[in-house]
Length: 444
Image 1 (tube, rainbow, N blue to C red):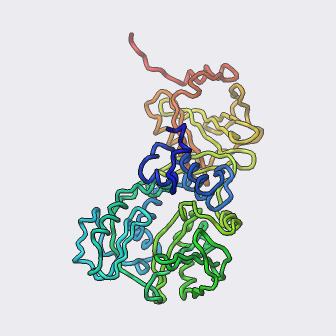
Image 2: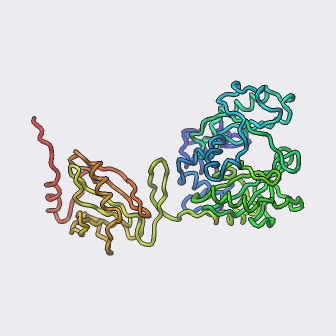
Image 3: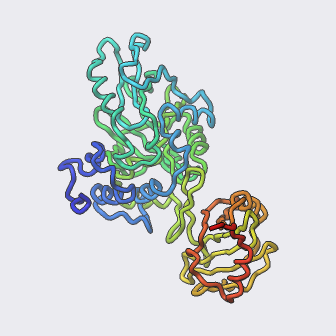
């Protein structure tokens, strides 16, 4: 099937439609995203040097993963998360939450309300008059959404473990009396840059773009803009920006949505990948401008998995991230190998140190020592303590760590470095290390 993958597409909707029906779960996230991106955007995705807004969103899908993102996109759980940061007064009241459509007791709901699924985009019912509500149509639409694996459609990682549920919310309209304009604030590492206003979403969907000073931007994202449609500056614009920046602090990109009703702000939702990173910009240069706001490392690097999230570490000046490899014998660290330069033109450098951080005259074939002094890591004592615990009662174990911004991160554990087939120079070093390794006596 992989051989003919480029030809297995829905005639109208393409690869995304197939994924929605569960036909492509075997593809890796990276491969799927590359195929879908080229199909939807018309050019190949460059993950090594992403430049456009959409390219960088795809990069973030793959390499910026933190466990709290799952709660942040869950339309029920996100309310708790947001309230803990900016307060309950900005949260639209929840009228109920259910695992199944048939569990909903419509008699307990008011005459007007909104139903939506917690795990997707589009599973939405707006009820303006309960007496006219088509229950059968609602059941069909929401059950279809409940059964959809939203993660598979565009590989938006945060949705992968969101529990599919239905929530009911209070029905609300703005000053128009018939709709709720959606103010979407695009934030970049805690700094608001652009505000998108969606209006007439269920009749003739339009979008206008504004700066944070409420100056109209001559551009459009996917849907048409109307420069003649005057959207008044929200009374609470400064507060909206302040709240958006609080919620997005420390995150490369986060879109925070709000509603403005009678000069009061209400939180809508949090979005990491606007339009799944597949919406077109007019002009295209605006997509490059938006992309320039997302700061991600360029060039080679290394991925570290820690506590459920992925940390991307990129190469710096003339040395990659230092890899501290503590060689432990029955729970006692005795020697530390420091690897540097792995992702640079100079190539891998290896330096050996004793427990007092004295450089040792040890080399291994093809790997030379660095030509500069390597300082003792700030957390070296902590590394030794952790390595000692991990290697207790084990004849030999190598425990690897990284030190990043003053914090220790675990790398990996190795029982047989280089499979025990790499020489030490001088040869006596091999014998001296061998004397440290006390093998158990086995009676044959």
